[in-house]
Length: 188
Image 1 (cartoon, helix red, strand yellow):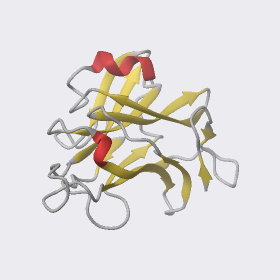
Image 2 (image 1 turned 90 degrees about the vertical axis):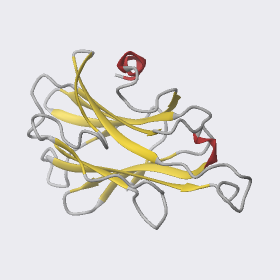
Image 3 (image 1 turned 135 degrees about the horizontal axis):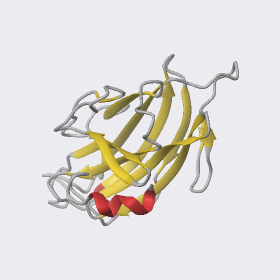
Image 4 (image 1 turned 180 degrees about the horizontal axis):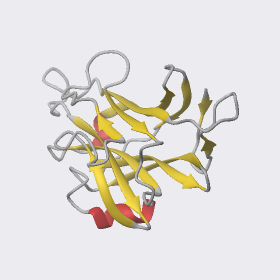
């Protein structure tokens, strides 16, 4: 497993040198102990994972809590966790890279607060890329509080015949990816 930092990239090839075809982008987070009823009075935050596909810098399709799969079925959201409670991954999005429509050249992964809460009360936010055997390939951990309602976590993108992963970790003022697709374009 590689702990990625901003600016690094990971080529998605297996130990055998072949391109990976099936991966999962898993995201997780914890609520700050000051959030909630007993703490500071800050409300619990329901984060939602999303995957947004682009082709040539133009929006193509997406998968999120309200639209669980892309039209080609290559990207599938496995369900909405409304609390962030519990150990491990809170939401998972699967990607069958071999089925991604050929014109799609990038997929942005983001988390956002549908209720419009700032992400500054979230701790231990991460995204991790897992192969189809469950092996964690890479992890990107967020270390700073984010005042915006959304966060662009990472990007999968085509580089010739292979896919690569690049961590981003940038706050963005979106509650859902459909709020403002144009706001995502700088990350494509």
